Length: 129
Image (tube, rainbow, N blue to C red; front, side, top):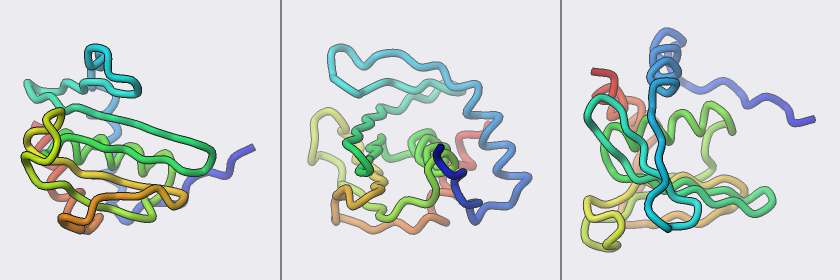
């Protein structure tokens, strides 16, 4: 049995709003890319790539409000990511606007930028329209 994730440093009312928004996300496959889906919420879309091998797990998302929300929801399930990183726009054709990447269990993340968890909490607010 897996222990529940420790609470996140997010106001409980705001966390409930994020969870409610997460329940409304529509998902579809990303057209042949393994472990990749497209999240759709409030006329916004975000590419989401999840990889896991044993304890190592990584979530890579489009940089933007919906991508940040997806990372927060994953952290709600797994606990705070051990590492957060970001990739600049133009580094990967699949993520033309750049990425936000969260890693657990030693999974690598890019080092173009190192966002703070609080930055993602604030960015995800824009997905709550």
